[in-house]
Image (cartoon, rainbow, N blue to C red; front, top):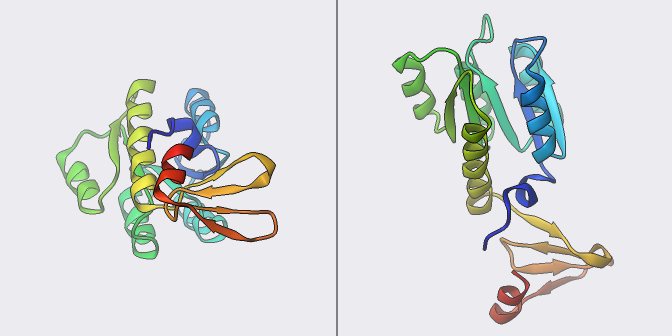
Length: 172
């Protein structure tokens, strides 16, 4: 199934954790283009609090967050949700950060300053991860919802219709 990147991510919530108060406007506009809702935390404590309260679908975090590094936050998040896609941003090119990011199975590690091409590549990997491990629901006309993973359609009356192989292939 080849959904466009924007179609997969458009109903999802992103948590962006960065200590930079004046976050690059280009980053934010790119995030809001792809995601339905963008939550921004400027420190590690707020990042963990927003994660617990808002239950985002994707995490993008800087490594350098002050007292608690982005890697440590992502380790805590990973313990709570082992499948959530995580992307790490870093100005630091040190191998120890790259290896630490690999250990917590991040989707991508992007060195700042980044270009949009690198971010879009990482978001594509995120979308593939969500398709493979998440639950993709696509809203159809008349408020019907197609579940890619379950191959069913939910109606407004909460009826669930299982599709045959030919039906879901045609729909997809």
